[in-house]
Image 1 (spheres, rainbow, N blue to C red):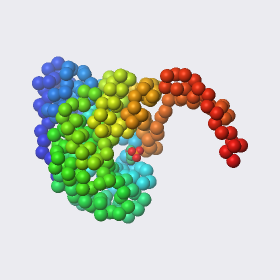
Image 2 (image 1 turned 90 degrees about the vertical axis):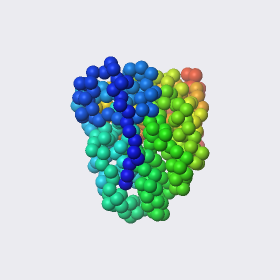
Image 3 (image 1 turned 30 degrees about the vertical axis):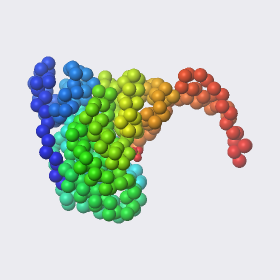
Image 4 (image 1 turned 45 degrees about the horizontal axis):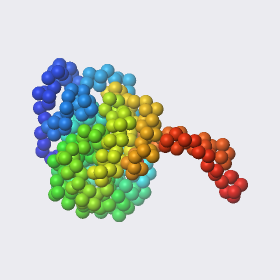
Length: 345
Ligand SMILES: *Cc1c(COP(=O)(O)O)cnc(C)c1O
């Protein structure tokens, strides 16, 4: 498998206020990469774009959290594959990304040595999926799968499509946000050959909705690819109701359907991005009923130890036998009579 050629920005001119010693110290442990395009979205130091891509000494201070809290390595039956849920698997087809997000859940892998998946490793994965007929949903992840060149992507998708029980293929990618020029009509036409194929992208802030990222999403949506979005709830970046309303409704207008709002994973080097779960629930409460239901993601925590994702909801119902007291989006309390256990029989 081969990667596309691309150059990451020389960010130093954007970073005058940043001491280069600190920069080097952090990047020696957690490599830095930013595209020219993504760096161009920075309006001032410490703004939401800056915080997502610029190294911070706080990354080194977090030594308490685990590099792999979700136990992904333990759930890997063959290298490059995570099989946690019975019917779906994640393929780590690339360990490259255009931008190294400072809050990355796979901080332990990304940028480390830039290894390419060998054909041998890939065919072992295909073999595993082929003999596990319970697998219906294959998720390409990484790194960013769209860092592979078109020919490599075509090989991967063609091989997966030879397995009859693989019903859907998903690609998880932040490329529409960080390197939108990678999304060409040619790439979209290639992906279109492998339907049903879904893409989940990763916008975290309204400032990432630009003419370029809009064009990228338009190419994909016009190729009939259903687009979803996974946002990570990040302190100082998007942990406000106003920002989230703007982001989620903005995405819908791009034909991108908000899918998940992720509580931060407890990954080493990212603790300074954590918000409380209270905050996340408050945001969901402030979205539901106030904006289009299509714009509302599920708020999920991916539990440590590979226990899986659990959706959390604000507590809006008090159950008292068959009488329910339900709180509406405006805060009004309404009584709802449920059928009783007797009536249910
Ligand atoms: C998130 C995840 C999936 C996909 O979960 P969905 O809820 O179906 O989107 C599959 N496998 C692993 C290991 C995951 O972390």
